[in-house]
Image (tube, rainbow, N blue to C red; front, side, top):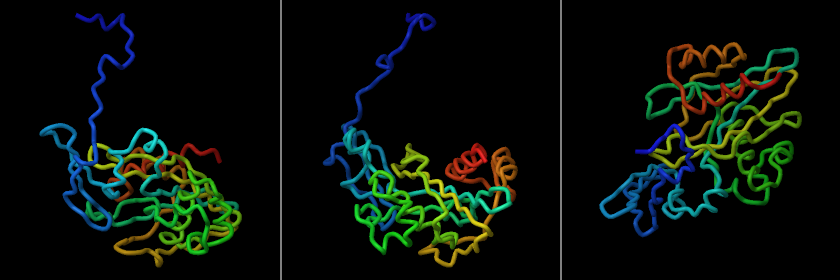
Length: 253
């Protein structure tokens, strides 16, 4: 019998062999433009299923440890803080229809990283303004994330990133539900610093994106919604909304 009270653990006592997801044992089950499903056979007769944004040759499960450490996220979530002169800072969220939930969820702007965003050279097509190019920079670990965030800001809120605005990567890659998907998001803080409130619009939203207005939250509003666990309509929200709320209420203003 092990005396757990007086024993220190290294972790090796409970370790197991890492499942080997060799590419020949990974089989596609479903394929569409935005979602794919793969059968990850990790031992004889043992299967796990992965819903993913990625193609078969880019699955997270089959990456080496070094490849894993250097990969980019699939998408970017934007924590948009409006700093309007002589006003209290506000967190900008929208109410976006999320099809698998059947509801309009309180949500931060977000979108997939395009292949063009990963190119090392800035192009007029990938960066909407000089201010955006300056904010994105040339660091290939962060530039694609900031480029994506600035594009999604324009598409989902109508705000064009300006020379007085700032962008910063909060976290380069977070998994949301790693028990069923390898999908990941980066978190980027966009501070919009203006003399007057910018006009808000979802006119540039693309594809199936559907919105039902915006919420401009003070820190007090954000704390209330965190305590409730729902928005003010009683609707649950995503982990990325929770992360946006948490970051906002802990920011020093």
